[in-house]
Length: 336
Image 1 (cartoon, rainbow, N blue to C red):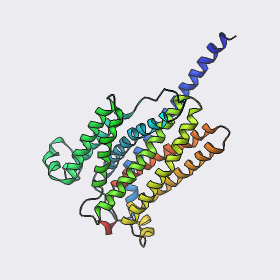
Image 2 (image 1 turned 180 degrees about the vertical axis):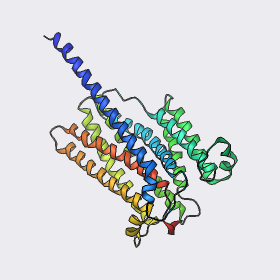
Image 3 (image 1 turned 90 degrees about the vertical axis):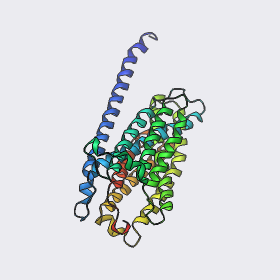
Image 4 (image 1 turned 30 degrees about the horizontal axis):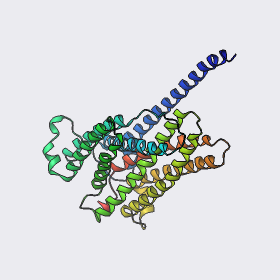
């Protein structure tokens, strides 16, 4: 019986693993489709009835910006979660396959697309002849776009090398470039705004990316006791990241929508409506995180915390998409 039993159970285990993998792949595809629909149709829905006008191709720009943000989250999270896993005593040596090279390639393509928009004066080009590289070198926005292209290329080279942790340096350059791009010198106190965006982006990328890789690692460890320790290490750091995202997000919102007008602008402007949608999604994420933490500390089987954590990372993906949409919408009138 000891010889027959493993052979009869193995096919069932393999079939269950394949079905689980197929369900996860289907869920990812549905999530990507939902995010794409949100980004392509979101600008017109947010602008409806506000009297504001979006830049041409706002949906495409939002899609590119979202791809760039996601390309930041994945490799940053892999490096951070990998370091957490190495701190867990007795952890299995197996690790999920790295997605960092693919993320760097996606980021490189998104940065190229955004640079082409910058080269034509923030208009979507309809042919290669409309792209002027000279304009990129001559403007601040163009130089920042070129920096992001170079940084993602360097991040890809680091990701496929023997020292993938080095990709954090070019990815940090992308975060700095995004922070500077979002707050041009014509803005009031641009360095303050850039500093807030820098912290916000860093915390958000670590929060979403690390959770994604932790969950992928737990799936490979298949119920190993070290999984509970890894999830606990992540949960302790995630509380600080959530505080950083919330504090910088509130400060940035109050800079662009003063307290005296914020209630009106949250419903009367496209930027405010999208920001309100983001706040609601973040509230859902925080509830899921609390649910996961409760299961991690109180449930008999602590690994049941993975269920709300998987829902959390899915909603975080929508938060990233809404953040990309937010960058493509016109700012409140008093801030322009």
